Image (cartoon, rainbow, N blue to C red; front, side, top):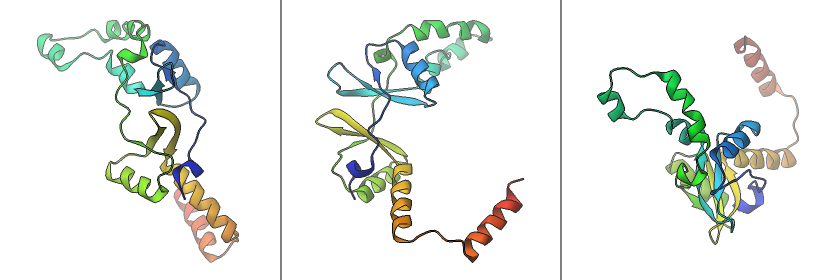
Length: 168
């Protein structure tokens, strides 16, 4: 099984020249915490995350050393300043990117070694998809269902009894 057989091609992306406000709004509305950033040619140029946005507001270590106290309410008002910046100014490197023709188990091995759960899939520097460990689990589960129909047996009864005792 190859990555392109199970990757997600429906992605929310931010443009590098768009405002942080637009990216933050898209992340909020879509309940995601990060987005790939592309340029006008759809080339992957970075990632923007909630952390990038929030860290841009935080005082740095040197600020803590230089000042005894902070007015965090004033710092929160600086959020507007951050939102007016361009995404390109806050984004970070995209990290590990993989090709769509890579075998799934090879990709998962690389993800495991790098302690990551999602990677961007690129072809000739263009973003073509996103691949997560959840995609692998779904694909394996669906394959398993196709070859072995679900039926209630002693194991599922035991599991449901365990859940009933441990989910109060």
